[in-house]
Image (cartoon, rainbow over all chains, first blue to last red):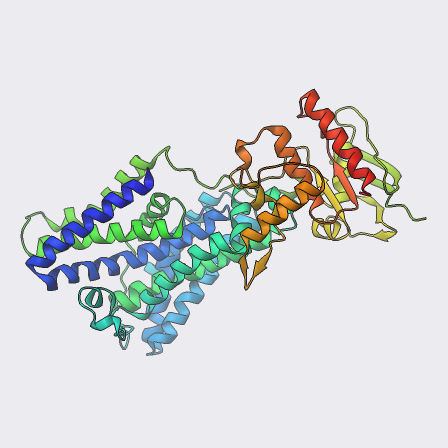
Length: 326
Length: 191
């Protein structure tokens, strides 16, 4: 069922793209290029969710992780006048937030929803309080012109000239997908998320694996935040992430907790946004921009409503593991 | 001759409940020992202690004369202890093969070798006469079958001591007869 829907969407996309490409090639490719840029932070944030929830930790603090990382990435980059150092600071912030979540959810066995809310409130408060105007980073992370592929027609202008985080992100998503289904780490992670006592009795440490995955996920959340402030726009403002971390949770569910599924769902979101943007620029449709900005949230609600009851989350998600209870 | 298993004066309390009171027990190789007792008598607690799932308050556990660390499942497995749990320790949405290799996966260059794993499952299931479909998903299997997978999971790790916690509670009478036959065969083959 799922596969057929995705075939239909893919075919419809190819047909539409061909139609618009014949009308105006440059605009058609630039819309898809923009779609990738919109999709990437959502896709990376969804990977945070996939990695955490597959090992049984609910992470609704993705929004906060991204906001805090975007903040430190931008201001470290601006104060030290070095974008790369900003990037490192952003990723480290993500790691620290990841460790904090692991501490609360795994060691202290706190309610994971509350742990996530704490992270979100902490991030919103800290970044608003510490925010200063009139800072700027020396430059955004510069785009890379892909050799060979860059010169191909259609594919070149779509895939080439993205920033380094974009390329790393795409490689990471594919790598995570392979690792989750083809390596011992993946099998153990999935077992811990489904039935932790099975993994424990097989000699797999539930605590260690949860700490590891939540921390790596934190680093990726930090990367998603750094992408927003250092690669995509090069600025930081209060409430900068605008709910992307929550949209990412919907994307994760839409992608059925599968990295590639979530990536495809993120691309679909990005495309919807890029197309409406283009329609607005062309003044084909005359809608107030506020309505266009609502689009990701409306799509989120529709997707969650459609997938309700049809998808099954990892069974042990949100439940702290008690060793002696087994 | 050293005993396969020595339990010496093991005591475990859960709050105010005294589950095990200074229990001592020895088991020889090739022996089938049954622990009988009513609900709450502490049978499960005792066997879980041997497998390292429960940390005893006092007392010692020795396997082949070697003392094992408490509360350490991986250590117990390394000493050749296998356990079949009352509540099956199987991941319901995974296949028989995936469940059997969990924790000790055959790999090459960091990737799991599912074909080799599947062959291994077929080999051990033939060796012990416990037939299972390696590709079946656990949640689709009848209880008796799932228990076979549990037993195979324990046997895969070169066990010399196999612990079964309330193995017949979930079985039909026919399945129980089969299980007892399997256990006699295992005892003969030296487990």
